[in-house]
Length: 208
Image (cartoon, rainbow, N blue to C red; front, side, top):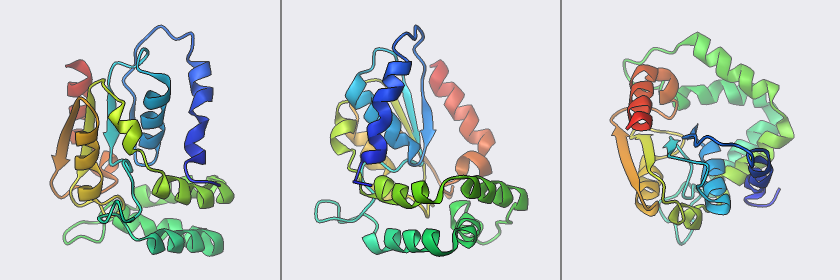
């Protein structure tokens, strides 16, 4: 899969939504935030009132000369190697940093771990393998600059999957009407671990 190819599917969604009369406020997490970002940049904002990016990968995850604060490519190469050789173990072990279960005083929720593992295992191995390249190497910088609707960027500063400094603050600055909400000590999976806080802030933003 070429870089960004997974995010080239948004025209199909635009076709489906052509007859829509409402103006929703899409809220997405991690790599799915890339789909919302690209959709708005390519198809405009006439059917979108607001957007929310939660623990999101934009603008660019991988480390490059232009993005020195990014994550080294080797990290993602290792992800692909694990998906290709033993993805069952990979999905289970990744839940530890994903939900911050490796932090002092944090107790792992086995039900959450099992559910995350289940979601990983029912997905296609090839799609997951290729998706690692798509979400890590797609540059959404120019897409973000085109977005003018209000955007709430929610990111935990202890995100061990999508490091905070190279993601949330940059996205909030690149969009034309962005608000950054930083959650001290929250992990990447904060919609699960701190759902009461995240849901309340989402509703406040949508209703404002």
